Length: 480
Image 1: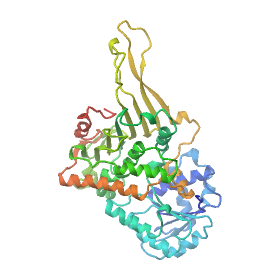
Image 2 (image 1 turned 135 degrees about the vertical axis):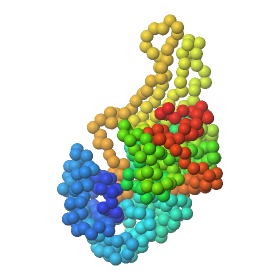
Image 3 (image 1 turned 45 degrees about the horizontal axis):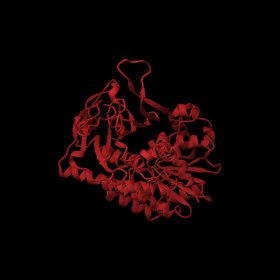
Image 4 (image 1 turned 180 degrees about the horizontal axis):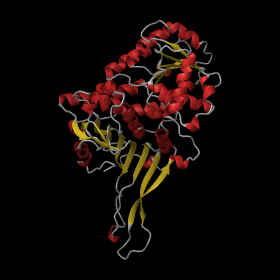
């Protein structure tokens, strides 16, 4: 049985993530009455601040990043906060941190929003201060390594103090409403599940497109690239949710058991099934933008675009390609999943001059959350030459369907689940390692085949080779 924690300890409490996401999420949860009255939030980072100075810092972050209509109860929320400066690389300061946390009668939730290099010394400090004993759980923000070997080192370090049932690995995509709605659509409606297989689905497309360039992530991104930054975590999690078998129940063990089966069934990618690119100068949203090397200030072979053709080798998905595409400086900011169904086996309208097109299910995740099912319908009116058909969308715009419902930050769901001890929307160690195994094999392939990023203009949909990757199979990307 999960027990709600009465203490939350935030490492990296002055960082960018804390300002943009964590503090606004916690304040919104508090305003909605979702945090227990006794919950105390302790922030820590290297910055030398007093508790009052940190509360002032948090107030400024909330004024900047929290929407006006969600700012109710800011003063009450700030009263929950306290702060202790700690240098995570030394033991000094952890005893004071433990005194500030105090007794956690119900439990302690810890959130590590720090560089992965600080995970191990932070764990050592927590052990030294006795902050790993009893009902203590820890949330880990990505990146969890940059390959399988480094990921195992991080997980081994955390496992010294925390058992797997107390480790919450965060992928913020899993906190998005439409991602969770994918499970609801599949497993709460009898309409879809019988046709959710290779007998009826022709292919699947998953796109995560960004219009931005490097912004403030220069050092991290050039060491990572699109494959590690987006494919290894977000995109493979989306693929797993699309392809997983029905779990026996909606709990952390059952859901994650089925996801890891998908990840282990991924076929190694061939050289003709991958395209990598890097943007050059161009125009995005009507404005000129520099190329990647210009932003970086040096020449680099880091990929800012990846397109892959993946296969899940099991009975359900035999022969169904999954096309994955992600990149920076693309024309639109969009994350979507396209389920393309097969053509009908026989058209009774062909003799009447009408053409049919296969059905398509579009699941929009960002910027707008929506579900759209394209179906064939008769065009109203009379036509002497026969019957006219047209593909029309059946739209479910989530904000319209659930009018009056507050649109939440993905971290609200994840922070609440961390506090309450529900691991369902967090990533298990065997999932992470299965993802890294598949991604590491792709990087090894690139090195062995000397596959370098192809150039593409900023504001385009990537290298032309990415279009050809799909068109060889008679498939067009959704935007084409």
